[in-house]
Amino acid sequence: MYHHPTRSRMYCSSIKLCCVLLLYSTSAGAQEGFFWHITDYHYDTTYWSEMRSCSDEVPVRGIYGDYWCDSPWRLVNDSINAMANIRRNVDFILWTGDNVAHIADQYTNETYVVHILRSITDALKTTFPGVKVYATMGNHDWYPSDQFPVISHFLYNATAELWEDWIGDAEQMANFRKGAYYTAKTVRGLRIIGLNTNIYYTSDKLTAAMTDPNGQFAWLEEVLKNAKDAGEKVLITAHVPPGFHVPGKAQWFYDQYNTRFLDISRTYSDILVGMFFGHNHADGFKLLQTSGGGPGVPMFMAPSLTPWRYKNGDEASDMHNPAIRLVKYNQQTGVPLDIHQYYMDLTVSNRNNASDWKLEYKASEAYGQSDLSAVSVDNIIQALKTDKSLLDQYIRHHTVLANGETTVNACDEKCRAELYCGFIHMTEDSFDSCYTAIVGGSARLCSPSFLIAVLVTMCSTVL
Image 1 (cartoon, rainbow, N blue to C red):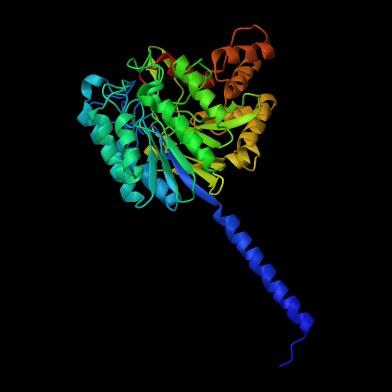
Image 2 (image 1 turned 90 degrees about the vertical axis):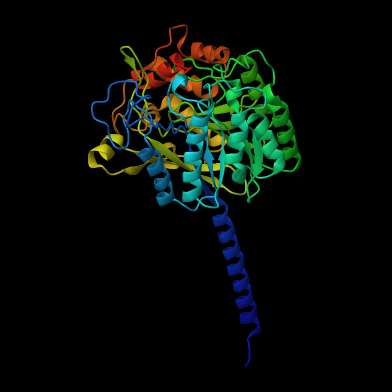
């Protein structure tokens, strides 16, 4: 058969082009992966008996819990099943701690803490077989709560054994047994660093006067230096977040630890693609700026699964719905691309005796950015400074729509200034300078819709 040379060349050229396009398309698609970020389960084994976590009277107990109480097992287990129903095929799971309920130490012990951790660990392993979970301990995952030591301890060893399948090699198991920190590398090449920031927490009286408890800072710097030399990108995950949190003027870290953590993070901001924390119970984000004031490292605080509200006398925090978070990220660079925030309408679910997990928002749609890199988060923060409707939306997200999809309490100029400065300023002095530059020397005042953060600060020893 005769083949026209020109047509043959065109055909081959077309085939090559198609192959190139196909490979590009496949490669581009493969770069987008997902991971779950779950936090603050606060499983209350006494919900159906003594109700020891409940901060107010609950005349009728809902099967999925109550806004005054920590999570019954049905809520914990249902949330894990919901994760699998929404997206079972994920690259990994971040689990940022606080699994024991807000129960007084007199009713718990070390065995009780291990029982809680084992129950949730087993549920995750059963529902997500073969999926790596990068887990970190929360300040409540201890007995007595908050008091993490700098010596070998039964709870460090027992937790390491529960998570050995996930942690991996012997060296990292030794690090965890030493102080509940470790590092691992995903199959895609992203470096995960799991930290124990509970030892920096202002409620840990055992570490108040130290400089580097458990040698974690020295270890962190070494891991980051090696990662940079190897051309790796790094994701940090932990329970208690650093920085200065508003409203309520909460700095969870002791000063010396806050300063050093931020300095280390700025030094390696070129390889740190994001930090993921729990502890605050509310939905929020911050941006660590570089020493030159540019976008450095984005920080994401996921909302809690527990709907527990704080109450002290006549003061009480706002309601917030149970939440689970799915993160889309670039598998090659590690950069977070989007947040798909899911929640359970607790009132509706209890009324219908059936769980009701829904998509609350996608960050890309809510904030108009194509990714959640440091530059994009900086763009969002700048928009929040001037766009009142966007800030109102952020406030609704903060409590996971517990006050409705449209309702939001007033946030005046001082409130907006406080929130804006809180997004980017990590110390009280820096925050005060920012606030004064915007509104002058007027007293700070923020809207009641953020009362949860104020009250959380007042009761930092129980969070």
